[in-house]
Length: 280
Image (cartoon, rainbow, N blue to C red; front, top):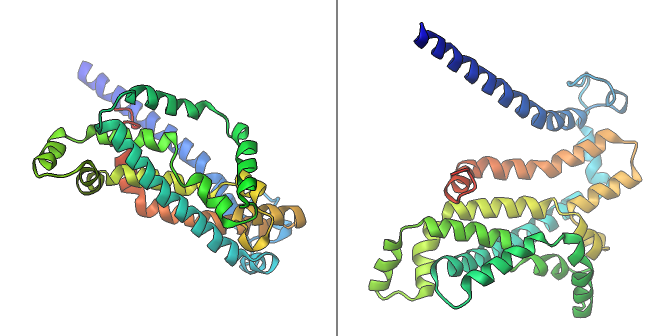
């Protein structure tokens, strides 16, 4: 009897857990499904409580390209996000390797001070960065979007440091015996074994830069180098009543993020677990 009661309690707990997960997943997916459905609805159907449209209006997606140069903005954002992601992965992994494997005076103090920059709000640094970019003459140019985020950040460095510390020391010792320099150890031995963490950092950086709005808004006025977030806000200001078209634009902006995560899902989850962010 006791075993039966214990089994029943286990079944109930598992059922409650799955129901809670389903509820959270539904809450997360409902806005996305609503945007997908609304992107092909008529204006009169947007406020109705039905999810599926009666007569899908696929022309809403074509209207997006008519109202703004969405293709150009999309390409700008891909270049912008790609350059920053590559820079973040390289410099954060390089700094993470130095903090995890190299020994030098003041290493731990410097690392703690670097992590303390995470406590500084973004709004505090916007004005000084804008003044610096203006002095360099980069305002309203692609350099203003790419260069400030190119050289890594504290979170990415911490992520890579945590992962490098999980790699066995025997890899590094064997490389030293083979005559490898610190750069060769980083580039040829440790970095290839840090692909899960690199994937996590790349995905998180890509999503953050893709969704960035404040920095492009401050730095960019020319439409030919604008990003998709600026284009969406421009549409919202000029065509605020045309919600189906706005939802179509939002869906087009969301689609690359879904594709990136779909391809990188396994490596992303593995990197989260192995780098210490998965509750281990």
